[in-house]
Length: 113
Figure 1: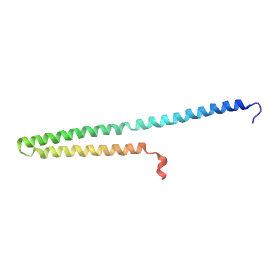
Figure 2: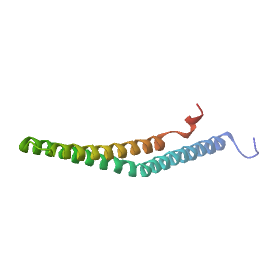
Figure 3: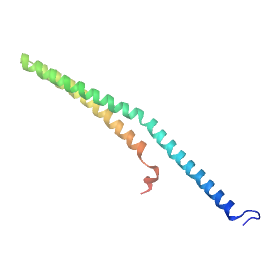
Figure 4: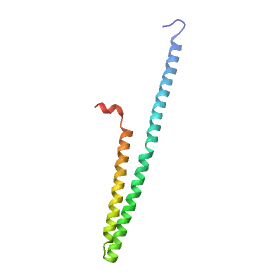
């Protein structure tokens, strides 16, 4: 024990150091949360776009079905094609967003398992 330092001073320094370490750890985790939240903005936008495309594709399918039923002609084919294209784009956006979310929220320390 260094000269001049009594047990009370050492315990006080220990408590202060522990408090500083705890604050530093909290700051590290806060920065991790902020970085992940910022990285999730684009995938979240892709999910919103995918949902909007699904709504549009379902609407196109229903309009095509209504036209087919109303006129008994090939409007259903057009409605099905529009719905298929919209659903394919929505599926692609959803797949890309899921891949980005997986990359964002995967702990790099888990890769070695």
